[in-house]
Length: 308
Image (cartoon, rainbow, N blue to C red; front, side, top):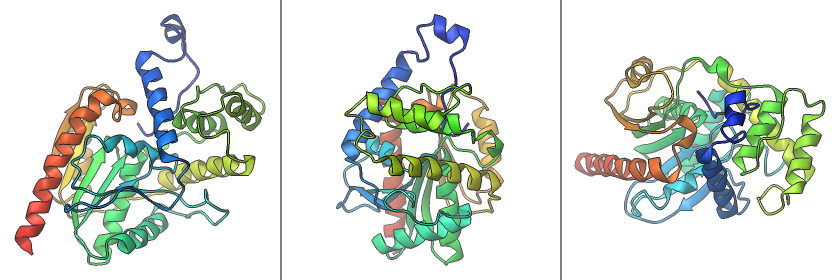
């Protein structure tokens, strides 16, 4: 499942204490902290950590178009590895949005090469960001470049019709990504106005300072990301892959890896995390994810040095 969009509470959920369980509230608090830490950064390439003697890791945005969520990696990934977030066009200023994942990947490949002129390149993506990272790896290979490591956080290249495109669901995603409660339902006659009202009622979470035009741009970016992802037909890449699987949501790890082996011609290593898909960057799972990623990055860096 991609970029979990909160839906109206079921009766059991309400009986359990409302729309969110304790872990969901923890997720909201984390998103609020990440939004504050990002400071409203909307650059196409967001430097999260620069410097260090290891290869940079470029993190592709999930459905929301922003990479602020990856700031959670900083305390858990070895300090020698620079970290950059790739972010969607259309948020800093009005501009045409990509008509396909391939167009998006070409743009991001250009941006990456301005930061790191030559490979091998290391890419990461969570959820829909995994699809974007894969497409960037394809594009870099078309240019004759090498992907040193492709890191996928519980993404899939199959069954993308599950991505929500209903306006109320997309606006709920906007709210949750910034730490607000997802208050919209399919019955809301004016979901945009309802979202704006929810934002204005909770100052200090990041979006209340955004002009209405930018909030609407964020909705447009998310809708476009969903549309181009649903239409995308991935090819095949030739690189090693590190796959992090959330064990509390289907399918099984074996089924997930079988899907990925249709698209990746290279060794695939897997790490299972005892969490749900949307919880992967919470403190518990990321405390295991970060060191495992650091160890695999160290091996990739050693391989690069050995082949130089």
